[in-house]
Length: 194
Image 1: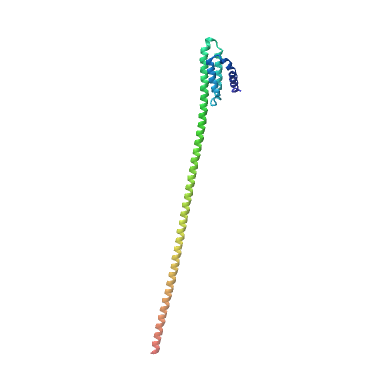
Image 2: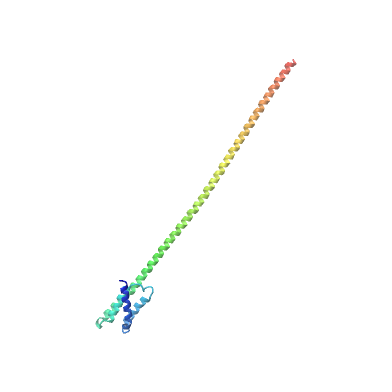
């Protein structure tokens, strides 16, 4: 209700002002400045109290006697200027707030994108490390398989060599046995021939 009262009073004064303002060029100019402030979408919603005070000062100036008119004209001019400054200041303050919110949103978005890039890079590095680990495991398995194959081959070779050595020993033992039997037969034959 407090904010509605100054607006209603300002509207009532604005409606009554054109009839009286026609007599005074200074008052008409000040009223036009206030109307321009109200017509501007950037400033129309701001400084309601200052605008009301400016309208009241213009009304006081128009209703003043000749002795007070000069002083009240200056006061009305200051009030109009104050209303203009207050409305423009508030409009700029709102624009600054909007720009600061936009900046904060942009900073948050930039931080989010940077975090996304960092996550993507970490994932890429994780995949690369996994690929390298899998390749190392594959190479280890291949080396282990090759070592097992070599050990098996050596084992087979040792088995073959020991088989060959056993056969060779058996053949030599048979040859020695045959040579001994032959020598014994020859000796018997010589004894029998005597």
